[in-house]
Image (cartoon, rainbow, N blue to C red; front, side, top):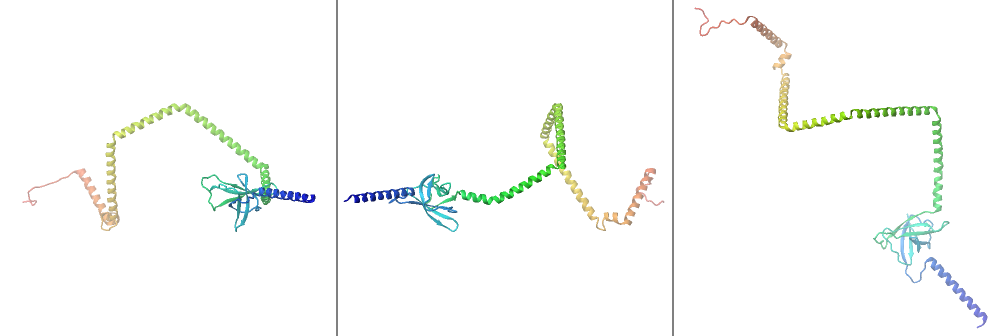
Length: 311
């Protein structure tokens, strides 16, 4: 073997070693494992937000997997994540898409959860989009017109308030209102002082009065307790009197209703003028007879068991 052939063999071996080292570095960076089965989990997001296959997947901040596939759905996106080792997921596991670097790149932040229940074998992890600088800038741009409108309206409001406060009429009314409020507070303070002085002067007498009232109430309560039976009899008598009065009123009502009949005494007394006149004449005759009896007495010639015819 010549010297040139040995040199070519050395160069070839060096190139092969470099290629192997390059592939090993790529495999380490991409978490490629030859001959080791992968564990996959799926997560659903409202938008992929710039995510691409091969982007890293961090589990509680540690890079343990990669994005294997992105499947577009009618209303959302399902992302398949591959892990070379087993990941313990719980029922409250969640995922979010975040920025990998400040200038670009995406990654998935996977939170395994803390509940005792394990995550279902074929379940889909709920995910959210944390947003990035571009989305924040877009949001600020969309709000710029609203901010300009709010600023203009605020300036108009302050201008109107300034013009109102500069007027003498408003200042005069405010000063007058403050003076009236101050006067009302003075009256309230004076009334409070008078009430305090009144309580200080007549407090003992008021206390004695309340004590006397309490004693009187105690006496009344004791009297009621002792005469409860008598009070019950009095109340029953009152109830009977009320019942008798109701019956009398009912009779009077029936008498008045009977006056509607033409042949009744009440109707003839109130409606028949001829009968009423006869009654008045009778009453006048009785009155005259009574007056004569009181003035002259009764001269009676009474015979018992004799005939009235003279012999």
